[in-house]
Image (cartoon, helix red, strand yellow):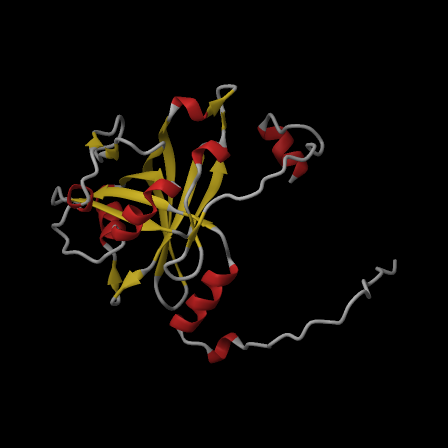
Length: 226
């Protein structure tokens, strides 16, 4: 079968980049400008020392739905694991919050490097409440909080980034965001998204199209459609 090619307009010029010529920083700058927008996981964790840590991570995604699992890529800082990765490895528990547009400046401030003993949530004046099933506090005002237990941490690449996968054992969702009991009003949530560098975005125009093939309602259907 011959696939037709669009011919309208001039063909744009492309710059060819060989990844082998890039150092880690250059590759990071390119990829964070390409893979956009990225949701932000605002994570609280506690190490064996008992110190609470709060930090944002924008390489964040859903991994599985049965059981529900989310993944966050946590890079190194100055060649050593960040406090969040260290705490999760030590205790196996953490809370992922969905950062929202209204909190963008606070989220950005929470990315500053501090000593291990510094409680960033306290420094930023953010109230916390105890977790239900994990020994890690969650942010009281966050519209969505996912209590997680570590499933696995897998190291990728030469830079030592840890892809951290956790099982969601408890969800806290602000009631007004729920539709029909199990759907989120994403526009009302107004999630904060990361672009390249210190640049953030929010949801703009949205359009709901007709579903294709109906809703997936069972594990069997997921397997059949996979």
